[in-house]
Image (cartoon, rainbow, N blue to C red; front, side):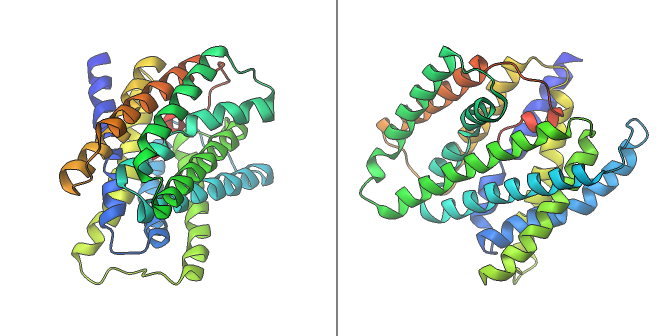
Length: 299
């Protein structure tokens, strides 16, 4: 069972690794791409939820729950929009690594909102991550656009941390129901945001729909669902390491496919960021669990 769960986890991580590539090649604008990711995922999540009803009990949404669904939808919308925009300004690798610093901000937010103490190991991991970000972005300091891109991606990480923290108030909701309502609320917000952005919304060719369908059905529905299933059987430490493969995959693909080369200093920065995030996550105070789906990496 453990070997099967480990294989399912790897497959889920590989699926999620397609997210930054799909965003880069999407013919729609960055905000419209986020809208299609969430909007196209809703019907599939609804169907999965119907099947899940056989083994899970759905909770009738109360006004308070609906409020938190909207709040979590707002935060995940901010994460996707800022991350997608960051890819327009900087490299795929840098944008994906920066947005995956979200676990650090989750711990800081937990201190602020819930008074959960920060351990010394977290501070060490946080310092290593900052050092890695400095090494990663050192060669781009003379390019204003790239600095903007890094800032947008870090802003996306803060929004994703807000998303994770908002889910602390929805523990009684099962995973399939939570994912459906959250995705639907985000899709509605993104429709309005896309209308105001005046971006290209509809692909002009049939092939242009492929990256959008991959984002919605393979990444958002398939990848996250597989990870949610697998981590029930796998330790948190192993899961944390495996989820760090997502930015690594994005970095390797950007190097091979988009010719985004990393210098030795930047490569060192990648390693430092991954080590720092892992140490920080492992040293963070243990908190009450939320539905396992949302233990995944931010994208």
